[in-house]
Length: 316
Image 1 (cartoon, helix red, strand yellow):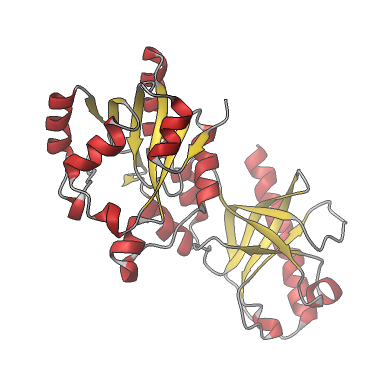
Image 2: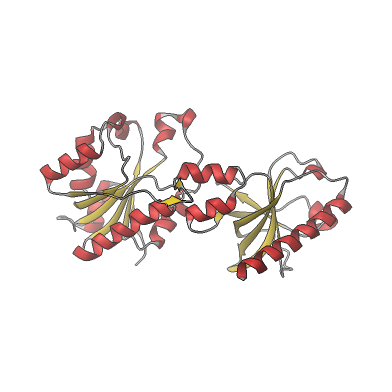
């Protein structure tokens, strides 16, 4: 069943009836939907299926920090659409996407639980991480949530964090790994390669004419891998190709903005528009300036060979 997405308590009640079907709920931003998020979501699904309840998520848009502390707000790993697609892929039934604004920020913890979790979503069980905070100025914590549950008849379950190679998996740790070029570490914490999605952008034509033909990606995502060359997979026109991708300023051509250019193996079409996704598997080298197109082309051909060798080794 596809994820049902609603955007207000009224829409939730219209969709799921009054009295409402009971639900098992988790709450959060879920940026990246990493292994820690996935553990919570799978636990929600398990608890819901045992009791014929809805497996549900309450999430926020925009990120609360964009409203409360805009100067400190993190760059996001995913767009809202990507985040909801990843949540839906786990099998969750429904998501309430609540607009986070000044009014919501001022709701007292007790009122937040009553308004959204009880009166709207009919929560019978709430699953959260151990550092969960809610309500005005984050005044609500796990202890208060448990007390409210005892009073109002819902259970509270704490899901422990996931640890990968001695590091607690978190959106912050993944952002750091990606920005440092450690896309293999990000892949382990996400459970899949970090991906950038967007549209094909027509380039200057210099690469196709002087070096090798590439597809350029224009994306709205906010976290880009460190400038350099990567072994990647590219999804275009419904097919997946192995590729070598450069993220950077194209210094050999005195570029003025960051570009994301991919050379796809066994691909000869000249596409100028359409959807494009780039999945980052392994960093190959730093970006650097060459003496001219001929030297750059020689290095790009070496990069392509190195990317092919990486995938051959990965395939075992």
